[in-house]
Length: 89
Image (tube, rainbow, N blue to C red):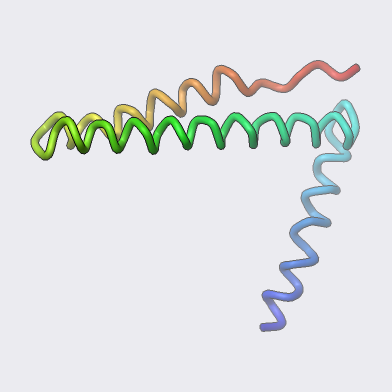
């Protein structure tokens, strides 16, 4: 229980410390984090819809076996392509 409480306070302090050291300052880094989080939420929704669509269209077989990981890899590539750091102001 003590470890959980210490981690609850220590993790945000470490994150803030690391983000404030990076170029652009803490405010710019938190904007990047917020933008990436929104992008991750949208891509997670796309994965959920795509997964449901594949499961409904193909009840089993190799399309479902390779389609879901392929969809995940494709969305991961989209995330990496759309989430670079913005230039500091």
